[in-house]
Length: 265
Length: 351
Image (cartoon, rainbow over all chains, first blue to last red; front, side, top):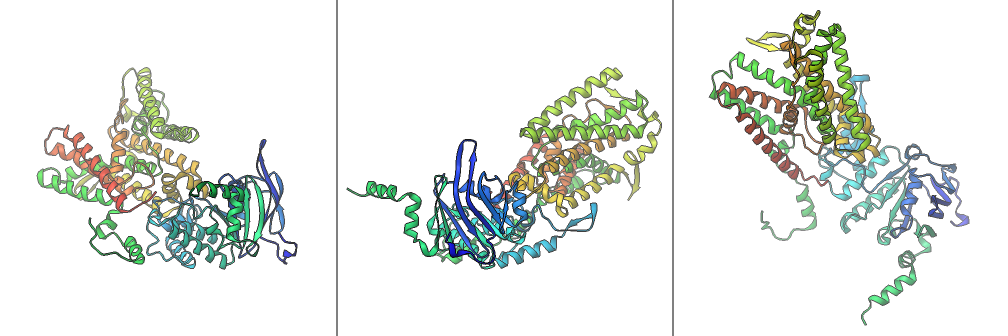
């Protein structure tokens, strides 16, 4: 956070010196970051760095115990994911919350189906849902031949993109993406990164959690580096290079030691 | 399956993977198509090979037989799509019939009230099944197996204590029996057939279940909870309500079939329904339901029951040894499971 950074509109989501303890265990402490409309905040960290705890606080799954969480400049403590969702903060988890055997459009609207008619006679607006699904996916640059195919037949990258498009359609202002590229091959990961950029260009705030600096660096506007439950600092893109980031994440000295160990005698 | 084409570009590869799998596979993706083909084949086979099968009396007989299994198979199919089993469904048919029989003939309860009592008890047992399954996370297979044995034992023991025998007689003397029989045990003439009312119930329930499955939110949720329960929770599907509704629907269907049998023959045995729970499941699977949930069809289950009804009566008309039915049923089940497996692979679902 640089002091001269205060623009007129407050960021959609901001945390100040936030922390979380589970009983006597300090899972996260002293983390500050923010994300505004059309921005990508990358949260980087190795396994056990506190990324999951950070997501859980932002998404409303767990309430924070220290520091402040602000949404649109107003201080909040989320009691449930529903509260976060109502403020337009949506989380896309690694398992994507999709049902593989169901058609794409049914997955897109699952839990928030459009209906016509009243009371016991209300039925699904199938045509409308098919059309909207196709349109919304097209906006993300995904051209599906058939929205009736089971979502399980899509590639990992496409499924990820459908999940993002769904969050956007249902009013997300910020999407939190939990390791969207970690299970994907190089090519598929590239596809997802492209969709994330597309979402950003449409004015969405994106919190992109990853352990891969090579995925984060080209996309991010700001970077938050976590290690062992604490922040190594927040950086703007202009303030850090990818090499510095990698070194910081792994712990520079440790990486040097490793390089020494692995080097041929 | 050797690929002789020379090295293709990346774009070609992707395009190839997305290509439609062909008309037959697209058709086979509908869960009920396999059952429809099998039903047609069996219909033709018995029509040609026996005299009685295609006569009005013959058709009415196998349709009636299919309808009783069909109502249960459709309810069981909904439950299976929702990811659960109910092995107590068969015993429930007996339980509800016995309740109505006992409270009317032994205790003089009016017949309409008896119907309501039996339905309420059935729904309560269904709800109890759902509650135990959902709260403990135990497989419904084992929970309802327990319910099945409890009902089987209670049916026999309680009937013996109260009536001294293992069946209820004298239902037709109960006041109001004929009025209720209009709904559950009557029949009407159509195309020279004596069509039993249960066939109307069967068709209506199949239509209703199909509409619910494919065109309502509840239907969407049934597929979802059976397909991936965690995902359903995450997007806000009321998982507990859906499962509760499914178990209660199955129990309610058990009540309906119990009434259809009771008012048709005006007696009920304490062993009624025992051993039929697997037939319902087989009908549902033959109709395209996956044992793992999340996939299937109500029409398919109705067709599965039609296959069973036609074969059951067809074997009688053909004067074969009745034991062939079981062997046929097993073969049919195996075939259906293999077809399901093939379709699922062709559909390329990476779950």
